[in-house]
Length: 288
Image 1 (cartoon, one colour):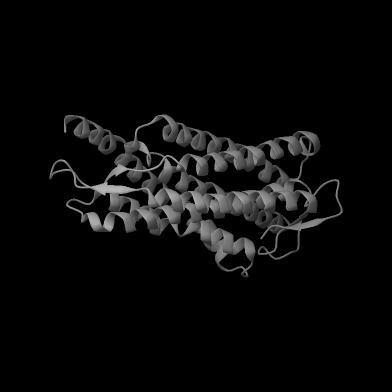
Image 2 (cartoon, rainbow, N blue to C red):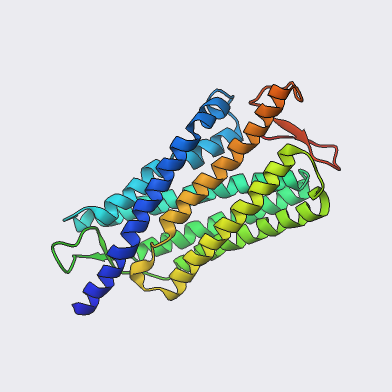
């Protein structure tokens, strides 16, 4: 009992505050970028990138509160712990998968819209997504929840579960590593001297965001491998929120650059249809 209470204190002192911090970051970023979103996204026509943006932007406001409900509700009924946890977990998967799709599109643009790279990226993305679905299903089936050791302890108490979730986050880390290497390679090889503001924005955001996501993913993976079961969710919600924040900012920054160019008279196209020609190619790419 003493050991269980000690482990419980770890969860209360670390995981619960991390969940609150993640929700705070999500709300703060939303308020900070709402004006840009209204002017650059809401009034534009619907297409794949706008759908990706909305799917990365708004579902966190559903699954992150579920995490808070799961972690902070006093005297919560054990019977609803699994449904809440499962819904939040699938929301996290959906959010990260959508954000990764935006990162893939950004990398594809920098790679010159080469169809061979797109084929490789799509195959890689689908394989990782399918494997993650299988892994997450097996992980959720392994979970067991129990009653808290003390009546004053809040939230659901996870007492058993498989470590197979390590596979899913290893694949996320692998995908981000590959995309980051591709971004570095094309940047050094082709764009290090470019003055194109759109290219510079894509490259700057790509490197800084990939590095940040890589570090968070690596930290999350380390916790899953070497940490106790109580810490399995320590960085999951934070990683999910940062994927949403960073991927949507890529879209907003690209559209902001195009809007500024339109104001300066350097382009006559509608702000909802930003295009640029990748240097060294004959392809005009649409960033929508």
